[in-house]
Image (cartoon, rainbow, N blue to C red):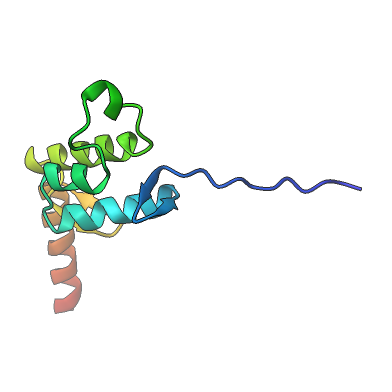
Length: 107
């Protein structure tokens, strides 16, 4: 008889009173990014805004905030231009896809 291992779900963010897994966390972060939520607003939502840095980095939401900050930095630097397909794309990749879509539509 083999024992089935229980797959323990690992939470990467706690938001609105619920633990969020990696996939849900990513969806929330992308939603906020698409809505151009400021860093301070997301930090407040995650409960790390008014905390001293040494306390904030121990928060269960610190990793999610760092990921959001990285998403914002990538978008502002132009490396993330538009969201479609598998996620954020560069300006060059976006223009390539748009051109392909236009060519397919004209056939």
